[in-house]
Image 1: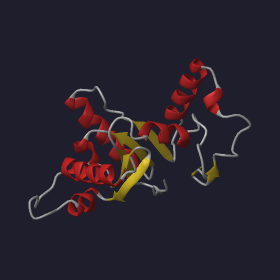
Image 2 (image 1 turned 90 degrees about the vertical axis):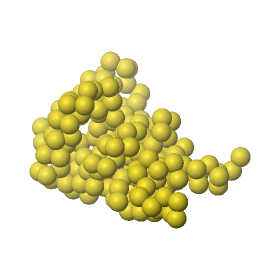
Image 3 (image 1 turned 180 degrees about the vertical axis):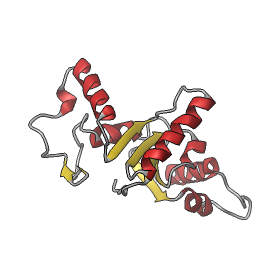
Length: 173
């Protein structure tokens, strides 16, 4: 897969459970070694930026590392893996208000979600299935690509189902 996220942009990874969102984030955060290819974050090549992969650390240290990464002062990039899963609607609204605040301050926000409504909050997003990117674009562009004679005003869920169905049809057995 290949994608870029730009400074001050909210970039989402949308996909069903098992699509590869969390694994991708684990690689981008240095918690998992890249499986192939090249990987850089803020210009730093993650295949060569440390002596040992953080994925080899004991679980307690992994959790401490993840917490430290999330709480670093003034991050250029903020990685949020399904941050609103399990929270009530008021907390979800407040959370997205804070995400937008940081993006407005120039922080690049990378967020995973399987909530279709939250995908609409992203400036751009990639829809994933089985570790592959099916499309990248604005929510409006992705919805527009799913427009048809029968579906004149598709929702993000409609677009996701359309792309996932096409992928399943074309995927080798």
